[in-house]
Image (cartoon, rainbow, N blue to C red):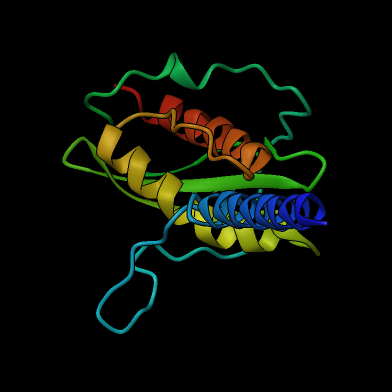
Length: 169
């Protein structure tokens, strides 16, 4: 009888350890979501993103291989440049408009982005500000892929690369 009670205690202890470990893994995965820079009021501080169905450009298609690293950071022609549509398949397309001042990227607006149910809207809302901030900091056309927003990041990189190719001196 005593051995049975000891075994029961060990089993319950093991279950508790497994549950705590599972909770720790779940909590750790929730804390790796991209963060959005905010101001003192809690509002996002990135450039404005809008959906513009009348935006022009050419579809780069699924699997577009225009290398986002084709454009080296450096001096660009001042002005505003609209990139081609970048594929965020199967969710839709991404298109950006880049503003260059004093030869540097000063602003990026997402003028078209995938919209729809599920995580596309949610991840897009939190990932585009991160992509914009990184592209401006790097002064180049390639931002790192954001986990969970891979297609959005690839479409962003394609459109940004297209816009910066137009701005090359």
